[in-house]
Image (tube, rainbow, N blue to C red; front, side, top):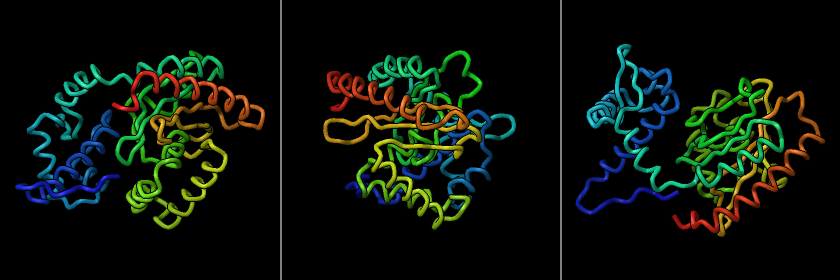
Length: 267
């Protein structure tokens, strides 16, 4: 992860404020459906209340967030406008959709496409058989800490080591079980994922549901996106695991070639 550098003619504090504002915006996006109070943002960010209040006031004035009648912050109209504009040049979701749909058809399960967003994993798309719609564990636009779920673990495990350590240390202080336990458990899961080549998530995101995920790499060996298949934990066994892994491997190969031919790696 690139470190913020001081820009000539601009105080270093401006760079720090920008980073903090972006972090707050990401936190709002994780709970956009219900909204967040100022106190919630203070707790989630770990920043002083005056700092959060000042930055949220700036985001509010810019239209990046809005405040409802219950004084809860949600994403503002400018975020929608920026999203519409960015989609004109952002083809990743479109390019990946055929593989995501084929994966869902082959397995009969809900499949997910997720990407890295800073120190988070972001759900870009999903495909769900009609009979599985009530079993979804993520939604388009949902966000969680990298390392969470099969896709998040797959992406984190194959990131460059320095970036991986930075992400783990960033999330560790907020772990319910404590920083030491979080880092130890996550490091073990990362090691296992790197050995097997796939990430396994069992009951740690949603009770009764498991998922298997693999990364899709660019030509330099960096993970671009991750694909995962979600299924009930009660149905996860060596046979179903191998069936899912075979389908994931096939679509990963096809998708990797598609992305390479499209030039997405260079964008």
